[in-house]
Image 1 (tube, rainbow, N blue to C red):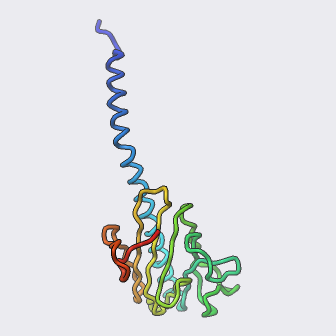
Image 2: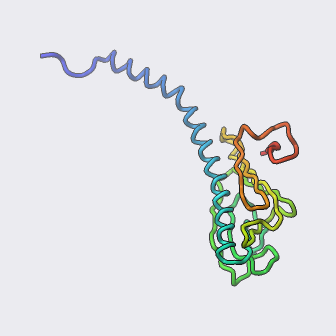
Image 3: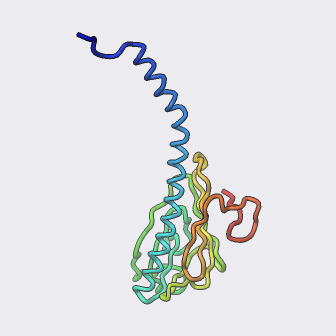
Length: 184
């Protein structure tokens, strides 16, 4: 009858190969996870814009998308999440009678989201025709400093459509234009 099981040398050789593979694969896997989280964050912003655009058309009124502060005015930090609501006042603040249609949660701790637009960076107004209120803009997402992921950028045009730039399309040498550098 042949012996059953493994010898000590076979077990040690298998463990050595597994440790070697884990040593090389773990950093790549961590980087991939960080990149996926950054990609998910910028797609959440794009989803918020699409939702606001559709809500404006559905309600037949302008809709605001902005980070609300404690007084329901659009002065909060984009990184802390943002809200979509019907613009009843026209002054970038939520009227008490205007319910929040959707609230988007905060981004991961240590990350940042900035919005820069023609006219304002505090809010974005979507009109019932699907366009913005003459606001070209750019959302910049910076992953947490401990992450190895690259920043992500969503460029918004007046028609209300957003385009996500690939990380390799962002030119660190440019200071102007949609492909300009992101300073995290």
